[in-house]
Length: 242
Image 1 (spheres, rainbow, N blue to C red):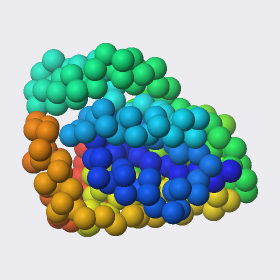
Image 2 (cartoon, helix red, strand yellow):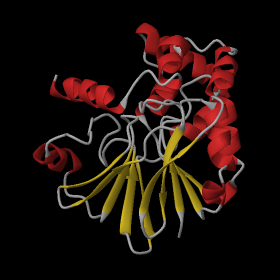
Image 3 (cartoon, rainbow, N blue to C red):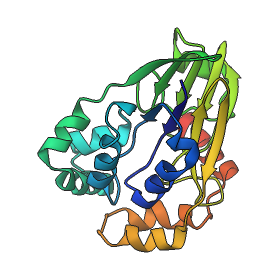
Image 4 (tube, rainbow, N blue to C red):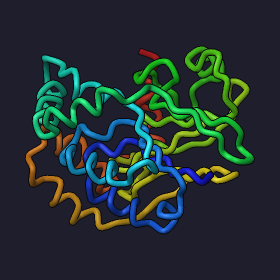
């Protein structure tokens, strides 16, 4: 089985369409949507294009998907969640509400692969490429898998920790990697951390149109390559320590 792991799309339809048109993704037997798909400028459109793949696509939930369903009451995130919730509509919200926290797949030469958004037990903990191994072990718990694929922090990595292989697929729609190229992972006996280029400036113009409340804060710097992996990793580690 060849698996394309697409995480943290955040309603960035141009990025998602670029990845789905990438020959490497087209050749995948399965596409795993690893959470944080529908909180962003084009939530309904991103969900629809993935659901059009039929049985080939598998969904797991992320913290932002959960927020688009549960609707936090306060602050900018609450406003963005309500905005996305309204654009999804009741039927799509029902689909998102049913997504599981984890997915298990057997991938040749890799063994049992567990897909989760942050950790197998929660969509919120932060694990970066420099998180101490004892903290990784505590957060992952007793995982019966050879490889764990996560996202959440928008920075790709592939590391050994807690007796297994921990892979972050990166972010399709809002990468913190110094460029706008959509980041994702391809699993086919090996793990490849890959990227797909697309026209970021055109995408920014498209993403600005719907009026998503967090557009400026979330997308402008990321898609202009002004947030690097080291900076983002250090920021996430500070949040984790706090």
